[in-house]
Image 1 (tube, protein in one colour):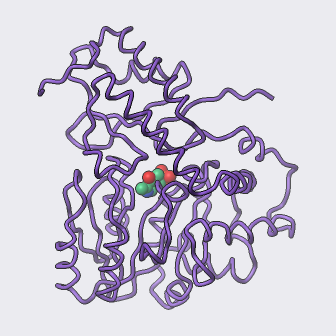
Image 2: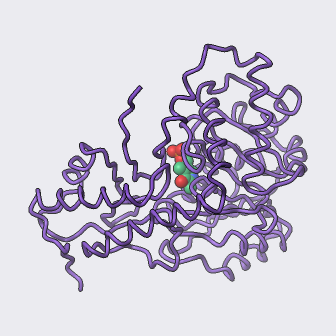
Length: 376
Ligand SMILES: *Cc1c(COP(=O)(O)O)cnc(C)c1O
């Protein structure tokens, strides 16, 4: 079977291999069969292994998009009388604020500039000023801007002040090497459609067993999205509490096999090679990014809209889309940006092809190259 290959430069779901796509095509099976359970146990272990966790960490799988992990960790891991501290420097940490707000939970919204790494002393001040902070939450990679946050340093601060540390690693997990011990991460999370290059619909929290077990006596605020309840069901039965995304799990199994075959280091090198090709094309066309290279993750490049009167993101997007390349609008308020991402099963040759198409789109719509910006 020939499947058209699209190069997705959006921040997930990402381009997958045909073998991962085809792994979904399996005989119908009831997920309560032992045969299906036998897939879940090694998968949970492998998901922990990706971030170098030992037996003191467990993976808890959910059927849902990545946001389900933000929801589950935030609502399940806050003890009565405790407060959350959110380091808010982008649209994904804002999502954590929205979740806490939605549950009516107490939190400190520590807003930080979105173009630079957060001020560690401000975080320390916040921790010092309040001894009721249960956990600190931060996005590792702010996917909206492409900013990489200092999880190791912030995790260490959280621990110093008796809080534990939750990192949203949805857009870095299985791409940027993470070691939960060295990086001071008690909880991290991801979704199969991003780093492991699987299908959407399966997401996972990887976290410290002792904290999850301790949380069994915390107030329960959700039935479907309670971390301990899902963990406990896995531990007792080896299954998801409710119907798992069966075919997505088969493709995730294949994706994990391909992850180990490629290898942590080689895969990260490939993503960086892809980003170097993205940067190279931007420089050639004079496209400007909103973030300084020194604070970028290496996985997302947020590009400023040119000031050319003929610039029209929709048109350029559609031109590229029709030719198999998907670019993505930005998530920065009050500023026109679009994003080019280095996730997925792509390599630098795909990016070289992309730039040819992008340049042709600029020509087609009379957008001057190198592109024009008002400010020099
Ligand atoms: C993609 C992503 C999520 C999850 O988004 P969904 O649309 O729910 O899959 C969460 N956090 C970050 C940092 C992400 O990049």
